[in-house]
Image 1 (cartoon, rainbow, N blue to C red):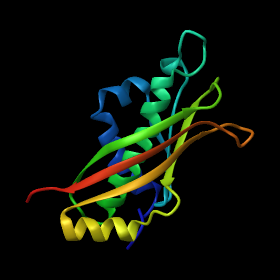
Image 2 (image 1 turned 30 degrees about the horizontal axis):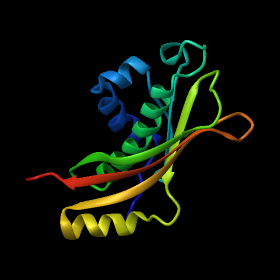
Image 3 (image 1 turned 90 degrees about the vertical axis):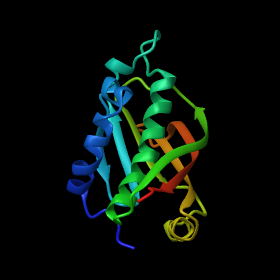
Length: 157
């Protein structure tokens, strides 16, 4: 299984997907990094601020969810697999306020594997995968975490 080749591939494919989502446009979400095993998205504070002057919780939920969704969508596209990707369920924890740029990184949750996910997708036409998403602070602690299960369904050809 080849990973997402590089950041240029991720930009070419993810930028158009994000542009098609009104919330992502309003939040001004941009791709920050992608290495095939993790995906990092960022958004400025100004369009995502709450009444306290820090990041709105809904923006953190949206950013972390889109990071997870984007990681799976890019992986599948890099493998030439046409699938629809949906979030099935998620649990979010808000640990401390975010007072600056919002940055979220998604990666496989502990115990998950791309191989198992792709084997299920090939055998049943759908696969489930848990991802761990985090919004890290400068000190290395997390401001927010999201544990989410995503479902990919093969497109009908």
